[in-house]
Image 1 (cartoon, helix red, strand yellow):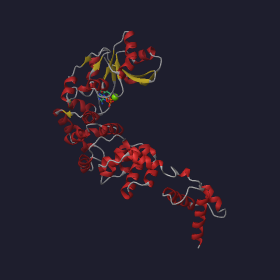
Image 2 (spheres, helix red, strand yellow):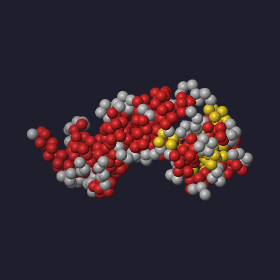
Image 3 (cartoon, rainbow, N blue to C red):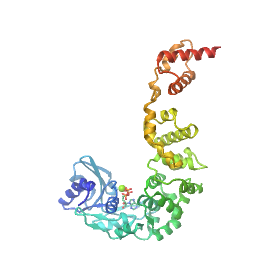
Image 4 (cartoon, rainbow, N blue to C red):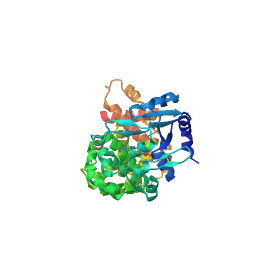
Length: 401
Ligand code: ATP
Ligand code: MG
């Protein structure tokens, strides 16, 4: 019988069927179910039109109604339900001019990218597989639905998706697909870098990352990706260094920065239009890695890491240096810190200022706080208001002498 995630989506399909429509599980969830690997989101395809879905279900969000997609909320879950559709001509290597709703699931399956993604499954577990997806799952090969050239000139992102699936599933890219990517790889320049980013991140998280990196080279697709196309040796270094999937995006970006000789974080942010949040999180990992390389594991390092970044830090050291630091060692050290952040200090900037009412406000307050913070962290000064204040007075006296 179908496993847990599918049972949650049953009601949606059942309701559609009870009202005379067809509905199937489609895409990645069917592929992952047949492979017996954990299933991500569950997509459903139906011959009901979007407005028909909206009237059938109470809680819906019309997320992409012009493409036929409605989000249906069921208890705490949400399912993307899309009307069977085919796509019109593509005139710019990325967007179809139009979509057309159709009444036949096999037409919908034939617009999908790869045979292993072009299967549908009924509530009873019957599989509709018009393009040989199950056979290709057994062979562990990525084949396009139809001619690779046609499919890649329609939507050039599919070439990177092929490499992403090679990495995610540890599959090989079929020979004709590989050759077509060699021929048409440069078309990916027409694709929005935000879409490239998504696929690249999924690729580097893949359990078969070795295979993914191999495919990126064999297809030569890296020669068309921002920054990789400028610094060819980066892929070689990634291949030599990275032995495991990189689970976090900030660690991924930090790895790229550390292994690149020509490009720093700002270049990656700009080339891939990374969010400010990801930039901040990558910078933090890079700074802590740098601190670790200079002084090893100490109080200052775990203080800067805070608890939130311990796992990311362990990951970057493992990926780049192949050194396994125990998370528990860092957590213990963190727990023993006399202060966990500057706000734990027994004095504030305001306290220090009011000790010297005749002095003007200025950077000296922040500098004193940093010195106090460091001494307290090294247990050279007690985090006690009286002791800190006498230390500050001594500093002031020394300065005026
Ligand atoms: P994941 O488990 O990573 O979500 P997925 O197969 O669900 O993998 P999605 O990107 O979520 O991948 O896409 C869902 C489905 O939509 C795919 O399985 C495929 O059938 C179809 N699809 C997605 N992008 C394209 C595309 N660019 N061209 C053709 N079909 C696509
Ligand atoms: Mg998906």
